Image (tube, rainbow, N blue to C red; front, side, top):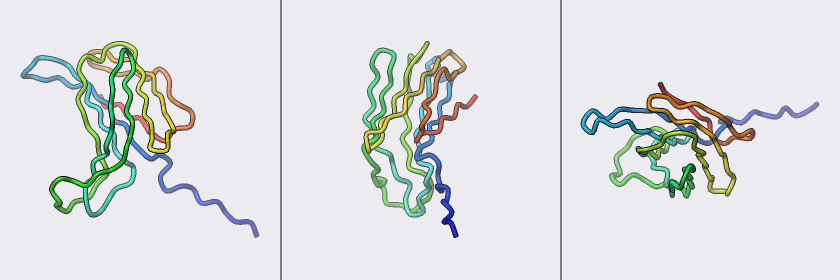
Amino acid sequence: MKNKVQPEAFPYEYRLILSQKYNQINKTWYTNLRLETFQEFTNFQYAITVDDKQQNDTLRLKITGLTTPKMLMGGSGPGVFEKEYFRLKGKYKIEIINIDKSKNVFELEFRKRTISVIKSPKNKFVDLFILK
């Protein structure tokens, strides 16, 4: 009898959610970037620690781990890193470097109200979502 190979519970480790938003007060458009774990935690809502660097047409996100919340209140949900980026216009590469040094590179085009995917990595540990 052959052993069946069980599919992974989570085909991806992370979910990258991008959206273009308008700030009514400053009258400017910005990109909201949210990186979250596919795995949901039951005791705390962890924060993903990320060293992020924007250089020329590349936004580099290096994942360094998870941290517990500052207030140890119970909760559940994915681990999250979220940040607003201003002035992302034109073609950009978003590099996400995992703890094990593996890398996913997405090539995107940012416009005032939309984000388009130009190229996506073949072997992904990050699933990309663009909200409208």
